[in-house]
Length: 387
Image (cartoon, rainbow, N blue to C red; front, side, top):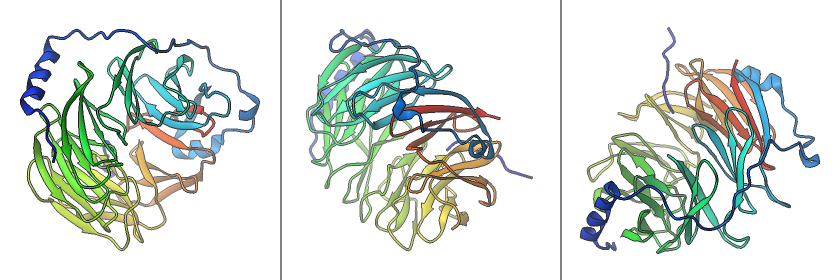
């Protein structure tokens, strides 16, 4: 019987941090408007440069999906894909010209598009949470209205950041090139706290329940209460992460360049388990409720027990990043060669292997039997629904 797999030290002002957070319960949600004016747009006609971007319907059918719509983000002259974020009701596309386009997930229509920052700015990542879109450059955070694209606030960041933000209520947590973990107060627009690690931080912080998990490129590892800046777990691995850490309510998981995969508790001082590999792990892990999936050197795509680190199965003929589950089967995408896999979740056996040329980003939401959204480097967005 097939088992259904569910979803994939410098400290500043702790008292001031705690006091500032109490404002959250009293403060109004609205933020003053400023910045660029968004432009609402209809679904764009297919530009000539997209004409050759066909859809291999048979390939997606083999994965269990059919095309619902195709849309075109506003990219600007010469613009290509920088970031893509899949939210509950839309797809946020960020071009290298720093044009943000929010596309309606139901119809493919462009709800709005707007330009943030300047062409010389370095943007490190975006987030969509509740009624806000957050677009972060390395020194400034833009807060936009999710419904209209209006820029509600621009907030300077106290340090030069190097990761996308992770939002915890009124606090945005960033990593920085200097090794400082920054807690930024979204209500006041000022630094709430800072915690210094050794080594540059390039991996996006993980949400370990209500806490933030961070690992630096030298392996310095910490889990922090974002409301106070207090550490709940501090440890170290022997090299930086190969991808972003992932987490559930009680643990953070790191695929490391020190040839290991680790699990750390939300509170404590040492790892829960460690799985050694034959070479540095450079793949992005995926945590679905009940399994941790990671493409390991020599072993291929591997399913680990999150509680113990035991290997459930490994398949050297499959690889990439698991993006979700369709009909009880895993869907994985390997960006390096465009291969996509449909695998038996219980055994890891490959059911289908297809090629998805031109798929720069592949996402599913919800992760179990949800929609598959594919974004090309040119900003062509395809939404596929289960067959």
